[in-house]
Length: 404
Image 1 (cartoon, one colour):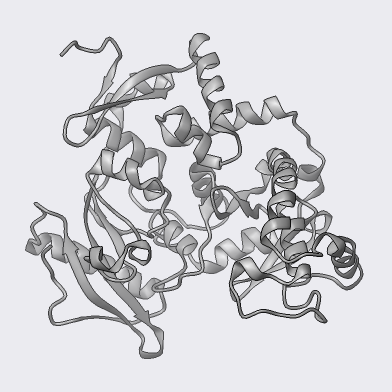
Image 2: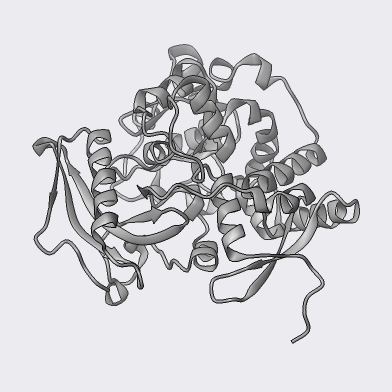
């Protein structure tokens, strides 16, 4: 086999760089509020919002994995009081630093063109005629939810694809920037006029498309450490794969990025781009602390499941999406990280009425021994997760320690 002329990044170096970029390489300390919380979210770029509340909601678990002192109210202050964050779409619903809002104008424009045609086919007819009614209602009477618009319209017992026309209009106006989420009640979005939610300084900034494409690509690579053009495009899901590919070609030709080969688990190599200064600093990357952390299934370090397999040898799918004959684990299991390894997955649930976090099962990865020291670190993390979710005790099924 001919040796590649490209610089090579070992699997250990790649893991450490990737975890450092995702806030999992430093000791988990800090206040988890105010400027410290802002710094964490800015480092990640965004935090995915999800409704599943088995232990705690995904966005809270993501932040608590990096800042054990974090409290749910701290994110609420950033979103609803100080407006340092706004809620919108990346690859999914996410909270995003408000300073990035001007770049979302490109998404608003593209979603307007894309969704209007698609939703004419998917949704009930008549939602376009509801735009002015919904905007006037919110303008005159204040924030609204899907339950308080179009109250005379027929509701359906169907799923997200069968919204009533005013609900569709509400969601469309949010996706295209006319409305913004001002808060959530439970997990239901509450919408208001964008000019009443997003601070003026960010609303009136503007960037042309090329500026936003450049920002999206650079900021994605900043936060990933190394990436293919496809991974750069997918990070914010704001620019197209072709735009990311063209950006990589331009910046590589200018000497601003270089191409390298990243070693995968098993010894294969995969090409990716990174900044030259990143390559030169690889040997000085800190090693992750050896503590055990339970991660959210929506943690940004695990968002790309195929990348998790290549980097960590960790095959992971949320079991809700796995056909029953192939299901080996529980309905919804949490990845468990120790240092720079993903050492297993755990099935647990907060039984808040009984004030206990109940562990149904823990499956160590192949080759991971459930030693006394490792189990003690896992217990310490479970104690922390119990307190975070409002429980006082941790309990276990009698057969909780499993082998695959």
